[in-house]
Length: 378
Image (tube, rainbow, N blue to C red):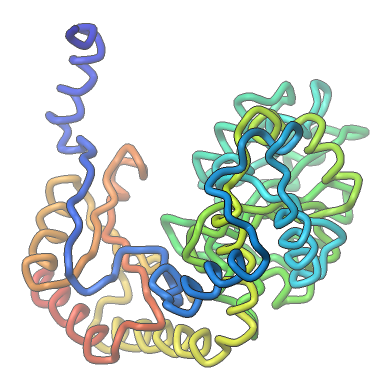
């Protein structure tokens, strides 16, 4: 049966705008595109130790068998959540199947009909989707603009206000002034929620994330940690109070109405967290590579193209879908896997090349890709 005509037209519009998404093929190019910042997705130690843990504890089980509230709450969940909470100096941790599930579950369940959500305009799609499902009113504030945020807060006295941001934004790689944001949320008794998807494994001596690295974590209502980036596996956790965990178990639909993660998935999460404590040199190497990338783009005169970032995400603005796709293809033809980010994923005119830096990128690779970018652009 053919797709309905109106849906075919939507696909045609994407093709005409040069913005049709397609699944990429696997390649052996030098990785400047994945979120595997410290190489854990390919870690032989994590792979073997996760399997060994299951064997050693006689856990021979392929699936969770059901939702966690019915039959899927296998013993590994309690062990992993206790360790994650301890690692992040949090009262509790609740594992979700993915970062998307965690954000949708949290924002659709917590804010109520008479509450207000104030979210950064560049917040991730999963945050926005959760907000859409909420009964609360929601308003966006200008990106990292806390004067604009305060202007909105003042409009809603005697109201439960949830402030939402990311510690590193996935498309820009920049960060808000978290100390200022925490002080503002405390001034007006707001509930601050931060998504730390792109800081776990990147910031802090053990990769514990940016808010913990800055010692602000105990002044934040909830932190959302995603495991598919720095940890190189799958899943996510919401960190917060015991009451928050209990509330989400009772009301977060993306938690309640889904089969739990398999014991192998949870074992991999737990093993990856243990491995973080052993990988201080790898995390330090990532930091050195981020510094090197920033230094080299400045030396080569590329700084004006880039969004200011001290994270593992570095974005060069190349307006126009066709332009940025062509430039990405040129870099790929030279052996470097860099992805073009097209509108409508980012606003029209803000199309970009998104470079992801890793601990395993060599100095030579970093220098070469930036030299190629300079040559192709200038």
